[in-house]
Length: 397
Ligand code: FEO
Image (cartoon, rainbow, N blue to C red; front, side):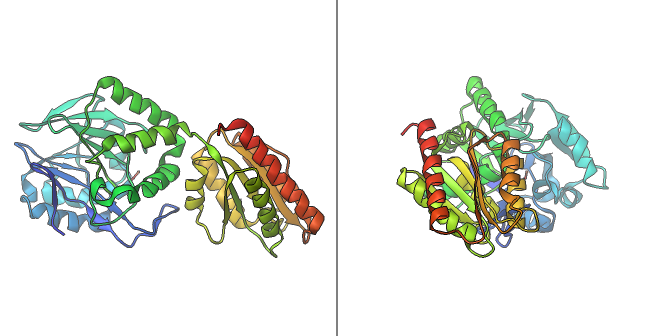
């Protein structure tokens, strides 16, 4: 695949990773891309590298435009190895004496990834680097997605190179938002819910800062997925909405089951919720990946978690999901627990404790011994209705 010229003298030299299906615990059925950009100006500049195993593909793409030794500057917006893993190999080809501009924390953390010493040049928030006819301004964006993260803004072309921000795990030949259309939005939402949700308050502050600066943005170029050239405000507005965690009248019903008892309860609870007009997403954990569940959690008001009691504890998939969700820190949710048991029945108490630890507003739990009979299914249905009423009381229609 030839490099795509995204603007006059600016190329996408990144690579597609068609086959990745798990990105540190997040399912990526459409693969991903590691975008990198080459700006041909008086000072030829490479923005970001790629994963280590794709370094040669990146170099081959650069070679179609310029001799890599003609690159003067390298910008490293983010230390994580999907963008820096190939850096040492790329620098070997470019020239190890060339400056690698990065944030202060990038300069501290990048050397902890590579044995070879590189010429790291830390930059400060708002610092500008002249490339000749163009200039880059660096914006510190700590924790979006790591402490070292920064964005680089190309002043004359009004292009924001946003590293992980506004990305999607999507490998494809449709490199621009106007080519793929709205089909990219679920991927952007999944990316936000699974990578950035815990930093939502920081994202709101960042968007406010960029707005205050009056930064005009014609194109947003993230390091994953498609580039936002036709309507960058669309993804910025989506980030505002997701960061505010505005909930719908929606409940995620996430559960596992041993002998279908917890499943029967889930079905009855879903009926109760639905009869209160709530959008219900029943998500059986051996069908749905934890990262797909989190995508649904993002705009749901309630998360209702069900588990049978197994050996005095939670079913392992439920523990896995609770651990994953806890790290992503969703805010403002209603929580509830349910599950079947044989004799000891600790699961619902354990779920309640975990959800309370996440500051969920907890409703009562419901349990059923062995196989739920008509009366316990009626109790589960009523439980669903009660949760639905609590949602309706808090979320405007
Ligand atoms: Fe795409 Fe935080 O790395």
